[in-house]
Image (cartoon, rainbow, N blue to C red):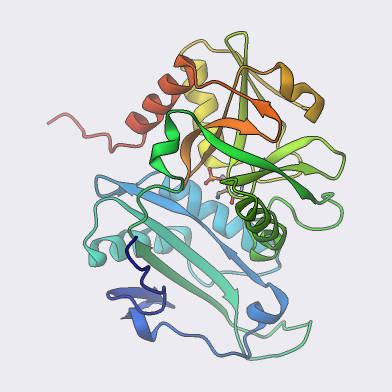
Length: 296
Ligand code: PMP
């Protein structure tokens, strides 16, 4: 396998606080509030055919996440949309991953940092498949994480905030050590929640079942998939799902900007088959993300 070029050693430019800087020079100081106190929010977007899918929805979520962390981004949504498109163009990719991030800077060090600057950066790189493409046929294997999504009264769980990923990294590391591709997480009540970077759907009797997103990110891909399913007259049940129900589902797949639609073949002891419905929704999704060319 080719060695991965470290993320701070790549070529190109990164948009940082209103201007493009050389990729290798896009640095922050070690005494940055975000590094010590997790005061950062981010997005994950994908460009297809030169256009970022649902860009404004992602940018609006970035702003909403920032607000939940008491951070005011010093740009407008339109400015960040434009900066995202410009960064993609400057990088010269048509199909790419786009990562905007907003974080509290280094002006103040301590829990309170009211006067610190809110910085924004946008980086674009090529990230072909989140999971092993060879696993698409049989589905990936998921562990069941020991960490649980926290109660909404303990943390702003709807924000796409860096701090919420601590338990995701721990869960995914443990899963990978056991030979799994990822982990499914329960919430604090013991209900099925999501994966470490994607939402989850189950299939039973030709209908979809997915957890109500009351304690985790209501992903943009999740909402897109619900929409695509309804266009095909597939019923979608958003409800509390208990892990005991896993044995009764026929298929399972996870959805997210990076993961797109990835079939799941196993969750712990439970086995699923990749059915035509999963394949159809996957191809519907891959068609939906392509730019809609206006008729001339
Ligand atoms: N849950 C988590 C924890 C995620 O990191 C992601 C990826 N952003 C998702 C769900 C899916 O969200 P989206 O479809 O908006 O990418």
